[in-house]
Length: 140
Image 1 (tube, rainbow, N blue to C red):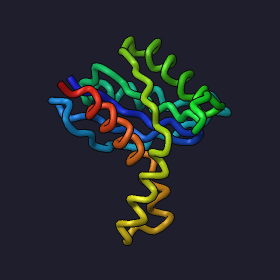
Image 2: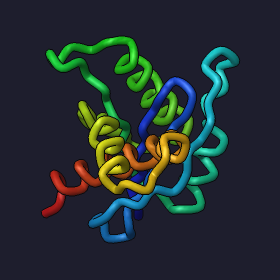
Image 3: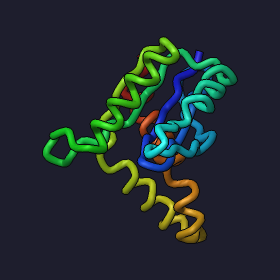
């Protein structure tokens, strides 16, 4: 019984899963999406749900700094509904303000990650941070 974390962007979805105990999050993949063709990577997400025996999905909700809902947050809400309807799993929206900024900062501080490499892993790292924040808040 694992939880999946998703960082939904306009071109990719970063994917992370928890360990079986729900203590730690690990990044596993970046799934490409194409909003123009309404191809949201759902098939691949479904495969990952099955492979990792996921029982819950946490999706980052990128609220504006004033706590309002903008276009990207609306897109995440739409994606959450799509996941819930397609797979019948509970979906939780997790406030993710600044997680991508934090992830980028971590990679820059690491020092040996080029801009091109950062671009390739940033969404996966943001998914890890979203899921880990959720796991930390919900451990008993």
